[in-house]
Length: 203
Image (cartoon, rainbow, N blue to C red):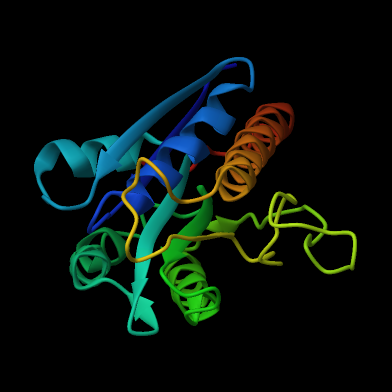
């Protein structure tokens, strides 16, 4: 059974795009999974069709001034038509990721915002299931989930470095772990639906 995972994101300077690519790479490592990266910079019919056909959508936005970007918020508000049309994304799998220049940068607020957005659409949220790293005297910035986030994947990018340098390898591995888990949970859900003869997520 093929699972369709879409990574839908906005990236202002390329750092969040790099994180999105890592999420997609992780999902793609799960057998029988089709993964598609889509930018939210332009809202068009092709985008809405791609999202509608997905079994899982992983949403990503940079954290600017303690919240998601204006471009991402424009997308969120535009989905009111999807929500109003019998909640067409109901029961799709959802997850989220974000990047900021500061180590904290209030990234949790962005992930909470994305999770609430997904909940309003009736989607099923999947978090990051990795122990927090970099929290002991023997830990390091190379630890998986070094920023200690479980609602979604976080990454940090130095403001004076390009996407060729940052986010760090550990943050990208963390994003990859989220993508892989989303794909695995999506397959479990699809098989469960098939076994119980429930209706699929609305398209």
